[in-house]
Image (cartoon, rainbow, N blue to C red; front, side, top):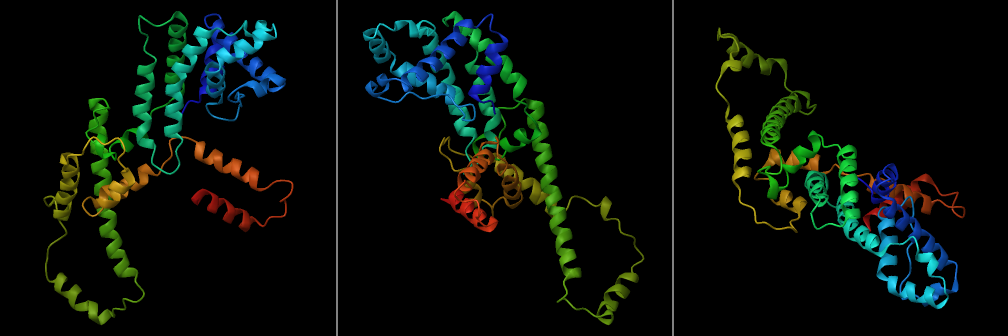
Length: 337
């Protein structure tokens, strides 16, 4: 998923001839925040000003929001000290456009960086939503039009939609009809899911046979097996099972997917997908197995980055002799809590 910091730093600087007002406003806000944090004026603000951090997602937007929300107070404080020149690079209209435009990206990143709920099925919906958000309206300010055009190009360039994203949508009961996909992609997803369910059926059958043959407690003597073999040898027929009609298992497999597609789901934006599949795992056993696989894949690297940050906070200069097992336990508890 695109980070706001990345979108702004790469897109705007590559097109600085068009977006000089935006770049100047962002740099002006940075300088303004730095000045206030180092001066006595900072204590006169009602809220804190946020500084941008290269390693924190959405930190650029948080900085711009903190300046925009208190712009009038900042203006008055600087006017009292005759230092309004510090606002020369900050265009209020551009600042407002930036804050309003980038809030959608903050919502997307916060949704897709979640670690305690599935997110992979939301990549394509958010991808389309962000592209729609970048559509230019006639009423848009000229700066906003330029900004939307540049960011839309960067979204298409950076976000790669693959088969995994398409398959994951099928396991959101609210979007199982795949209306968000092109008809060809939707047909492919349904076909692929049927194929994978069929593979699960075969694996289950083979697994049962293997378990029976390989079970050390299942001791069957050669004499006990002879009657079965001799009985079968009296039948002078070869195995033609490959030519038989579809088995009952095939019908059950098809019925399971068709029943899932026909199931009516309420349009509940707060639906707990994991709980839904837990409640319906007996009704759709093969699909439940596949849902556990696809919905367990995170859509972004945020969760792993948070774990690495937690390691850095756990192992510091005062705790260098921690046992590796102790560190593991601390991180597991931290993640669970």
